[in-house]
Picture 1 (cartoon, rainbow, N blue to C red):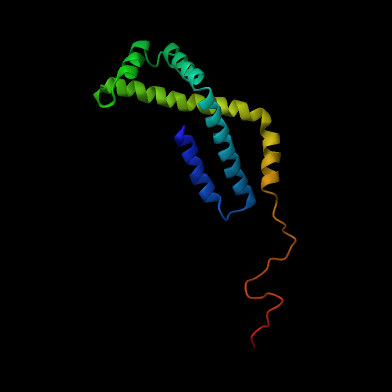
Picture 2 (tube, one colour):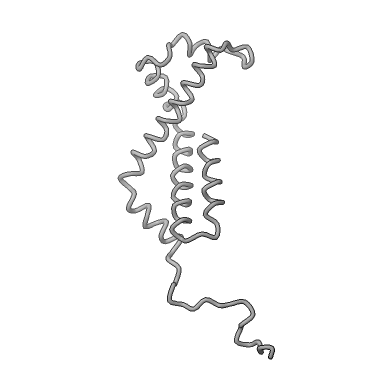
Length: 141
């Protein structure tokens, strides 16, 4: 879950000082991931059960290998157990993102309107002020 939030930081930092559209993309990405991680945290036991069902029924790992990983005290895991852990982790990440996309697709338009209200268009008709040319300041000749 932390990796999902962590990648948002990169997107947000990259959008600083850029066009408003770029900032909106970063804001939606952050909102998308924060909501997803919050829901996954609240429903963590159900999410874990879903992952176990998917990876075992699809034949990616066996229930016995999952039991060994659950009982493994960290550094004493075998390489086979490490492969099981990596497989479960990869599928957890994939399933998390698929569920999140399925949740957000139907509400894309309201989400877009919400982000546009937070980050409105820049007024391109207003003249931009230049540093050093303020009206109250006399020009040096």
